[in-house]
Image (cartoon, rainbow over all chains, first blue to last red; front, side):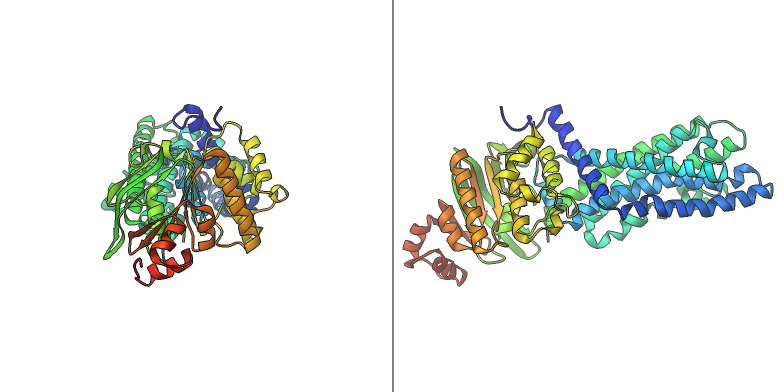
Amino acid sequence: MTVAYDVASGAARRRRVAGIVRRDVYALHRNGGRLLDIFFWPVLELVIWGFVTAFLRANNVPIAVSMLLGAVLLWHAVARAQAELAMVFMQDVWSRNLLNVFAGPISLGEFLAGHVIFVAGLVTASTAVLSTLALLLYGIGVTTIGPAAVPFLVVLTGMGWGLGIIAIGIVIRFGEGTQSVAWVLAAAFQPFAAVFYPVAVLPPVAQAIAWAVPASHVFEGLRGLLAGHGIDWAGLATAAALDVALLAGAVAFLAHALRHARRTGRLSKFGE
Amino acid sequence: MDVLTVTALRKRFGPVEAVDGVSFTVGAGEAVALLGPNGAGKTTTLHMVLGLTRPDSGTVEMFGHDMTRDRARALARANFAASYLHLPAVLRVEEVLTVYAHLYALRRPAVRVAEMLELLEIGHLRRQRFARLSSGQQTRVLLAKALLNDPGLLILDEPTANLDPDAADRIRRLLAEQAARSGRAMLITSHNMREVERMCDRVHFVSGGRIVATGSAAELAGAYGVDDLEAVFLRVARGGGPA
């Protein structure tokens, strides 16, 4: 019996994906400082927006307007998914391990799948912690939104993955010097995501951009839901379709970046 | 049978012709060295062999698989270690090897990791973080990673560059014994001429992106009219030709 599964078998593919997940889990376990990024800063943000929400509600501002805390909790899914995906990739760059990974039989799809699975678990865990805390402290949480919270979170996490994959592609395409993009890409989309205000308040050009951002449909849907209009399934479907387009575009861009890096020798520079 | 066939590889980076028509083969059980001064094109050639850099032209066939079309199938049977690469710094040695045992889709990762820890005599380091190891210990872990999948072709870029003479000697013996036992082929770059004389059946001298001399260490020394490979290296690096 050979020591390894046939490279193209399902067992081999699952094992390679599991290898990436294991790498990410071990790295998280061995780096306590990352818990600050994952939990401490989001909790701090939650506390601040929680008090703002409590203040607005005490002054009888309609919940559809005052639900800032819910918006923060949902946006957390986008920001965390994007930042964590970029982080797990950059860890391999910083530790000069990237070439070891790409000199093996793993495909780009398996590499991404492993990281995406890990990040999905992380986003779920951190959102659950934040939501529980919000419920305990302010009586508001993701559960306040009801069953719609699940598709909302799925769509927002998908957008975070898309942006995270683009961030990885930018670093591979343009080099390690562009790594700051990896930390701010989600924030760059926030003004167009209608997190704290409706799309209608934006200037016309910005509105056109906003409607192309999956998150804006979610947050408009959230406001409509809290105003008693029910779940906007059409808006959710549009958001999901935009997510699919974003993810497909992001993977295509990453594949292009990797081909470019192989052609120009930039990939080898990640070993220096 | 050749496990690696490199044909007319070319790579240009801007105005620099880094690799200019390099061709060579590595047979089963054979140890082949690429030697040459810094910037000669050795590492670029290795990276093209591994699919990390795409050649402008030329082909690489590994175990009969074209690297541009069937990269995964070829690389599953090879492995690579380089002195300039590291492994995830915060992970423990055992964790690092477990990750790579999965990335090479090994059937029994835990068993294979235990075997490699014993083979490389690093069992006592299994719970140490990679970043906290000495450079010699890190080299052993890198080699353990490179041997995990029992590769038919082992590609080593300066494998003993960070080791003291004693540790380097142990590693060379281990690699030679392993290769002899398993019929493993090796493609090696090194600046240690003694190492190459001891380990390699055939040597290709690379200069200015081209292979300028080929043969066994003894054949090359004879052709250049010098005593050893180091003297050949100096002649080639300084633009000299055969006697």
